[in-house]
Image (tube, rainbow, N blue to C red; front, side, top):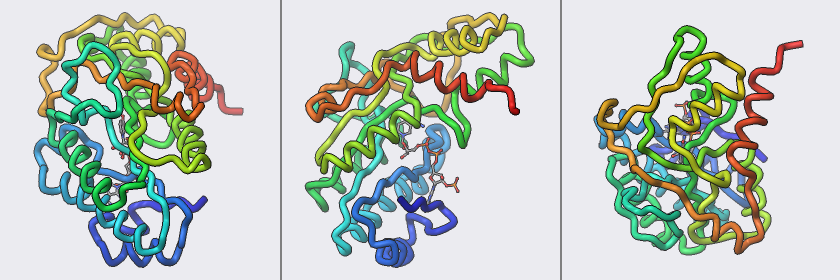
Length: 257
Ligand SMILES: NC(=O)c1ccc[n+]([C@@H]2O[C@H](COP(=O)([O-])OP(=O)(O)OC[C@H]3O[C@@H](n4cnc5c(N)ncnc54)[C@H](OP(=O)(O)O)[C@@H]3O)[C@@H](O)[C@H]2O)c1
């Protein structure tokens, strides 16, 4: 497995992307890179589309040239959040934010260019190696007696370690088409914050807030739980989000030796 970062190639640079893919000559390309700042995308739609949609097209063209398979990471934000039962892979896309539109348009373009590509929608990622919700909550809880957290958006928190394991299985199974890969179960951000505080053994009080009370530039879906049926059809079961969070906190809070 060879990891590449933005230092190796900018997704928007088709020539450099092609050169890198030709040199690496992989069996599979897992495209996780994206402009992921959802509120940033809302204010910079040109940048968002050029990285998330056109950059993904550049990778796909390079994959086609070398005969590599492609796994593209997409998002629960391709849906509008009006459903009250888990989204299936063939539910209609109706993104409400620029970020969601960039991912939805990328999906459509990639499937047209490479019909056997693998599109994996995931949601609410947390894990080591970057900013994530549990880290933000722990940081805030260290200095504040109470935290206000949105309680009217429901989704499935997903540990990057569990997602990475699932992606490896998908490649080994030669998967194609659209799949939904998240940790099992769902919650609101408020419920997730409560579980983080409880798991870390902190006295901080968590109070529920509405999205309206915490207006942000990009709208978020009220409900974006993704059905595990597509993974179950491939006999892949992902752990429950509470178990995933417990493992993450154990690792994160373990005293340094
Ligand atoms: N986070 C979530 O909750 C979530 C939910 C659903 C789906 N996803 C999808 O899952 C994937 C991973 O998300 P994440 O939150 O882990 O991402 P992340 O931490 O924001 O990392 C994104 C990576 O993309 C790189 N990147 C950005 N613009 C680039 C460009 N023009 N060329 C090359 N590389 C570029 C960044 O490099 P630099 O750091 O050097 O800029 C960074 O390493 C993304 O495709 C995202 O859309 C995420």
